[in-house]
Image 1 (cartoon, rainbow, N blue to C red):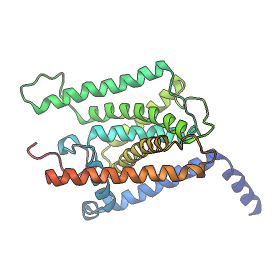
Image 2 (image 1 turned 180 degrees about the vertical axis):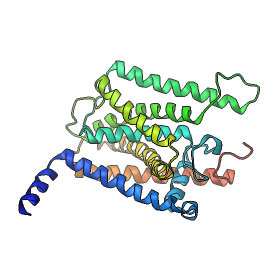
Image 3 (image 1 turned 90 degrees about the vertical axis):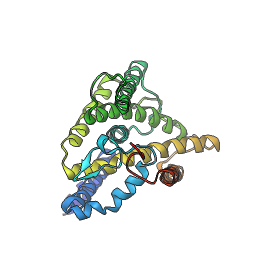
Image 4 (image 1 turned 60 degrees about the vertical axis):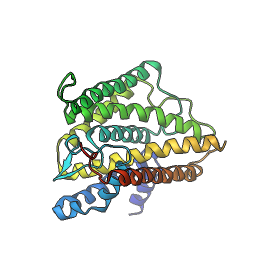
Length: 284
């Protein structure tokens, strides 16, 4: 028993082992929540976690039912495109976290930047084509599909995460690592493979998985806005570039996330006040 305890303690000292344990426990907890939530329709209809996610997602998303994925009759908090975007942000964050690169502060090299801008351009093309279908006589290139919205959205999310995380590292750390988390084509391929797995999980339409991914997508939204708040706050207060240890980043990060939740809630409140609906827009 002592030898096993020593081995376990030695294993726990490895940063990658700690990261895997944190990820495994987080995913396991979400899966248990999801299994319980979808076990009975009544659980899903009155699920507090999804209610909160709906409220936060409502601040940034049109939430049109026909352009959203659905869990047993209940649509996800974000539409297909927005779900893809913020799931993409979470893919970048998780891959950067698992690779131990959260202190790496350089933007990707130009060839990779161009590829990321290409992802944003593809979403722009698909978005314009999709929007044209609101007008029956408007020209369009092809019939929009939710899987295309998801796919182009997740590509844009990969770009957003790849821009924001290095900027956050530059703002937080006194001695950031002068390297890019996304530095080579194989790094981009890893992101694309992880994003591809996420896309397949969404398209599986498996209720428990959709429940988990619904919450993860809204977490990506809060994480992205929280990171932006932290960058702006520390820069405006001239307190950027001071952290030497992780515990010194806790306060600015927590404040950034809390402000993100407050901002999203305020926008949702104003929107609901004027529209009176949380599903789409009046008249659409």
